[in-house]
Image 1 (cartoon, one colour):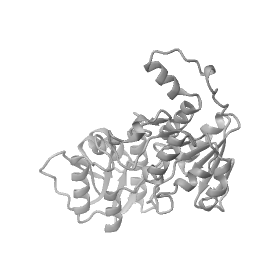
Image 2: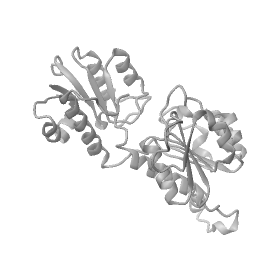
Image 3: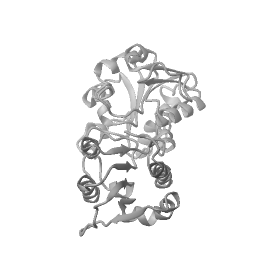
Length: 327
């Protein structure tokens, strides 16, 4: 079995990969030409080192080169990627070619959920207000204005009930919030962490009772543009939004209008329709917005968790079993 992967991944994970499937032959792809012979390779492993330094809209030359080789490999059958989402154009091209594509759902769940709850708590406790006062070297206790609402007993409506949504729900519950999940399969019992779940069709009815709208869903035809002016207007005044999903889930002009009017009290945004977020974007200057540079999954342990998932899948592949996390 020939496996395409980056030179960095071969050096870092080669021993673990060979331990999982001793018969595997690693084919490291260098950062520059000449490329090795890719004939006979049936598996490719796309690791985060290829992506670092770029965004989903501005791919690094290394990432694009690797993708081009993957798409050109005549015998390739299966690609595993480091990311949880597979909505990027290169991944869609792989699916269109008929390749099997698996993701690393769950590997980043803890980091992303921790980021989501950090953003929630930062907004809940008025940290943007405190940071702005610090920049002015002004001592302005929160007692001086409208005091923060207690989070205990508040409702968190979480779009997406996969590993990230489940861990976010668990953390919300730990701080006393009541998490409800929105999911595709309404008939299944609530997954771990959720007090209840509902289908996407129930979203308009649930928004009026929502304190925190948390987006942790994949970008699909169902979720693209789902949070628009109408959805935001259904939230009670003074509520908050946390987005660790994809920028395309939200209509950004509608979000800006809700934030500027004060109808939405604040937002923690890790993802945007255009990344990097342009310097002229109004989001940078809004005092009730925390801008995070698509870093929710950042964690020094992520590469090892992704490699462990890949090795488990590689062993399944070698045994002819069904792969986990198939897109």
